[in-house]
Structure formats: C-alpha cells, structure tokens
Amino acid sequence: MRYTKISSRVSRAPLFSLALLIIALAMLAGSTAGEEFYAGRPWVEMIDIDGPINPATAHFVRDALASAKSAGARAVLIELDTPGGLMTSAERIVKDLLGSDIPVIVYVAPAGSSAASAGTFITMAANIAAMAPGTTIGAAHPVNETGGDVKGIMGAKVENFAASFARSIARQRGRNEDWAEEAVRHSAVLGEREALEHKVIDIIAVNVRDLLTQASGRVVSVGGHRETLDLEEAVVRRRSMSLGQQVLDTLANPNIAYLLMMAGLIGLYFEFAHPGVFFPGVAGSICLLLALASFQVLPVTISGLLLIFLGIGMLITEAFITSYGVMGLGGVVAFVLGSMLLVDTSKTDVDVSRDLIFGAAAGMALVVVGLGLIAARERRRAVQTGREGLIGEIGEVREHIMPGKAGRLFVHGELWRASASEELEPGAKARVTAVSGLEVKVRKAG
Image (tube, rainbow, N blue to C red; front, side, top):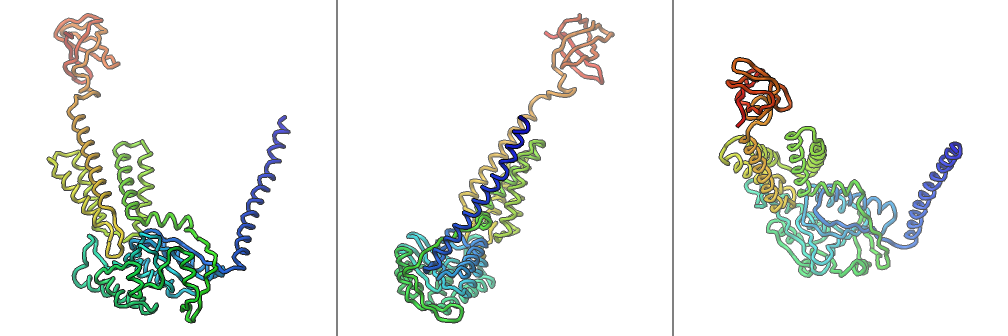
C-alpha cells in the first residue's frame, strides 16, 4: 500500500508539469493568434487615462508608445479624463508625444470628462486633438499650496514658464497660441464646440469609431516627416496598466497616501501603548512605509509633515498631562494646517480632500480625548495590586492573633504576618488597615 501511494504521487508530477506546459503554449498561441489577427489589418493601440497625471501615468504612456511602434500599430489613441496632476509628469508625457515616431490621438471622453490643467498640455501636444460632446478643456493656471495664486517673483516665474510652455506646444502643433496662454494666465475654459472654433482641437467625435473615421485622411507630422492617417477601418486594441503601474498609480493619489500615513501612525501608537499585541505595529509599519513610498512620488512639503507630527504629538500629550485643553486644541489646529499644506499644489493640481482632513482631525481628537478620559478614570480608582492594594481588603485569620503577639492572616491568596490591638480567633474575618514591611495590621471586620 505504501509503495502504491508513493507511485501515485510520483505519477502526478509529470501530469502537473504537462498541464503547466499546455497552459503556457495556449497563452503563447493566443498571443501569436492576436499578432496574426492584427498583422493583416490596420490597428490602433488605445489606452485610458482616467484620473490625476502622475509618474505611473507618464510611464504608462511611454510604454504604450514604444510597444505600439514596435508591434506595427498605425496610431496610439489616448482617451483622457483628468483634473490635472503633477507638472513634471505632464512635461514628460508632452515630451514623449512631441517626439513620438507614431501618430498620437488624444480624445477627451466620455461626456462629462475634462482635460483640465496638466491635461490641457497633453491634449494640445497630440497630433490629433479631439473631444466628445459635453467635455471641457482648460484651467491650467498654476496655484500654491492652499489653492491660491503663487505670489511674488516665484509666482511670476512659474506662471511665465507655464504660459511659454503652453505657447510652444500650440505653436508646434499649429493650435491657438493665444488661447493656450489664456488657459494658463487666466484659467480659461472651453467646451468642445468653442475649442473647435478657437482651433484648440481638431475633431468633435461622439465615439471612438467616429473619431477614427474623421481622423482618416488627415496629414500629421511624425518623426520629422509628413504622414497621412488611414484609420477608418482600423481595429482598436486596448492596453491596460501593468500591476506595478497600477500600484504606483494608486499610491500617487494624495488621499490614499494620507490615509496610509494616518493608519500607520495610529497603528504604531497602539503598539507602543499596548506592547505585545503585534498586529497594530506590523500593519502600522507597512502602512507607514507605503505612505513614504507615496511621498516619493508626490510633491510633499516638509512644513506640512512637521505640522502633522507636531499636532499628533500634542494630541497624545493631552491624554497624559493636565493642560485644560490647550495642548489638544493646539494639536488639532496644527494637524489640520499640516494636512492642508501637505501637498505642494504649485507642482500638482491634486490635493488631499478637505472632508478627509476634517474627518481625520475629528477622529484623532475623539480617540485621544477618549483615551485621556479612560486614563483619568483609571487614575482615580483605588489601587488594586501591590501592598497598597491590600489596605481595606478582608482576609481570614489562620493563626491566633493577640495584642503584642502576631499571628497569620490569609488575604489575596497569600499568608501574611498580622498584628492587631484586639484578640482574633482562627477563622475570624479581619480587615487590613496598614502594611508595615512584611507585616499587616488588622482589625476585626464589622
């Protein structure tokens, strides 16, 4: 029987390996079949950008351009809906679009979408810029950490650079340079019809097929030469972000980074407050490391971080000292101000949600105040352990106690040497009134 069991196990190993080989060959065959399917027909690589512009987005666009060119695609189609994002990432994308060896079409869609701020630069940098009905473009004015204008010489430098950047993109693509500058200096916004009239975009299309039909026959400049688009019968192949890009894209969200930071700090606080639990410390450390990874992507201000840490420290201090609410109030104020200044919005158009900030501040304040009340209540309670905990306890006399002659008292599960000013018989109940060294003083329990 033992030999049969071993043989059956051994026989399954080749079968398992064969199954893996068949799956791998099937995947390879599917990939080859896909290449053969597109080989005889024109096709377009399509990617979606739905959210803030960040390093993951820039990497995604660069990968899509490279793979589409090497695989023989006729063009790359970017469906765009963004509130803005990191200016550095937008500059990388614009650089890749202007230097692309394959035609690029940016399509602001579906209805209700927008190409705001950094999305304006990306749309204008495409060979073909298109919008769906009910979409908008513009509002590319740089702002500071609080969402207002950048003041002084630095503000003028940032605004002038962004305006010049927008004009240069519009000039290279033959678009409206004056409006591009207006979008930066005065946050000008256009709907799809106004954008077409002002020569900001080239096409208004109701869907992707309509867009490819209208784009066919247009002449674009690609890689230093002129090329006529032939996309009317092109097949659309969608490309998604890789797992690593999706993780980076998620971590680049300021709200996610903020929540990770808060979860990390709270987890570490509970671990230090209750050593040996382990789970809060482990989870908090992971969350805090992920938050630090997010801060490597986002333009985080040191002043904002320091204010947050100061606020949390003051809130925790309020739970252990009597400051009559001064430390707690100061901690909440510092925490809220630090959260609002955490992301440098002069470099990005995305910020931590105000509702999230005030909710986190209220939650932190309630937690710390609650812990403070519990600690205060515990401090007011009588001592339950140690020698002080014996006073007032009732025990049983085990050995005769007489004035001037000590006996034995069983209390708290221990035998104590006991003395009294009155006679106590074995079995009597006695109350501890004082502790002196290793001897307790007792009296008869009434």
